[in-house]
Length: 147
Image (cartoon, rainbow, N blue to C red; front, side, top):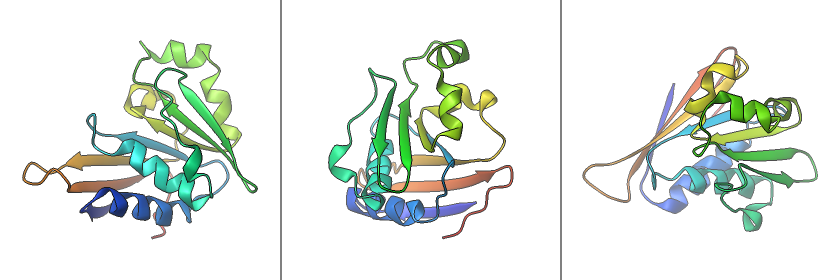
């Protein structure tokens, strides 16, 4: 497990960009946290590393946004609105796992169907300061943290 304290949105973006430098072709990232915790800012940081930061949009209504960089494909899911795992299967969600990096906001909804190797990232707001976030990375399966 790895913990990082972010003091502002830019800290979150920079940390996520550093984390992105350790990712490989088919990594899966599950992002958990309350509304407004900074999940989308974290995704922005990952996209920044791949020179795609200007293309980010929330996939809340489309379920998945696809980003293509010169060296990898990135699939950004927001599964908050899904009723259950069956809806994820219905959109062919599991097929993306072998196509590129998958970032799944609210991924705990589908955690039981994920491959065994992935990163779970929890972003928690501070009760004392609205700008501070605790970011916890937990590697699952054979994943390792290389920061």
